[in-house]
Length: 261
Ligand SMILES: [Zn+2]
Image (tube, rainbow, N blue to C red; front, top):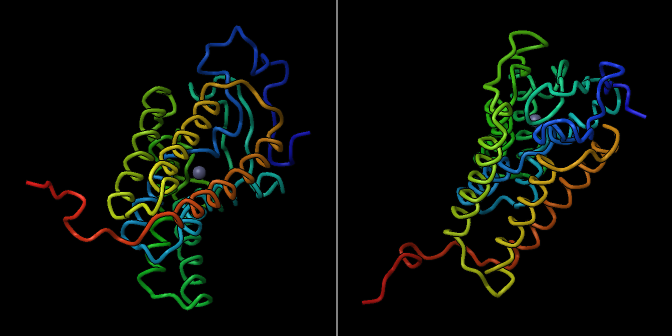
């Protein structure tokens, strides 16, 4: 049973797992709330501010989608499934002013950064970094979404629509997460084998999940997809944090690139 914010339209339309549909259309609703490229920003900002936990950064870059999942289940924001709506996923994200408008995203970033600084007594610059991580979500979404991201309220909608080019969108996600990971690791010294290989294995897992989201079959109702997405966000953040414990501090400047003569 779809949540109050999720409708399947139009009635009588072909099933989303209909094998007669082009492969790029056979995807499930979680595609709108899964985007591993966001984690590239988390890794990059961890390189900038090693004092912020990867757990916090992994959640920060997905806060807007976590909130979106909850709001859709509560019927506060709306989505409907229209087969073939974009070439990557069937989501008509027609009402999400609180989590995915430019103003909304800015307010979330500002509020979370303020809570981080004031409640946890962190340095202001760490709060700024967390806010940047959070806001990066909207910027990355702008690239892939069709014009469904409002500048304010539910009007003046923008989006560059890369989801209409599935292979390009998929490649960008992988490039972002691997680029961010490489940047993060260039500033760390692995303490053991888990630290050396773990992050790459983890990112391979993330890419596998993204592949299933993009090219896999339907997995159920929007509510089920939202719950799976929520569990995944926290699970991924916990794994990233655990792996980070197997990394040492910032590598001495120049050591990583030094070539013995
Ligand atoms: Zn989003």
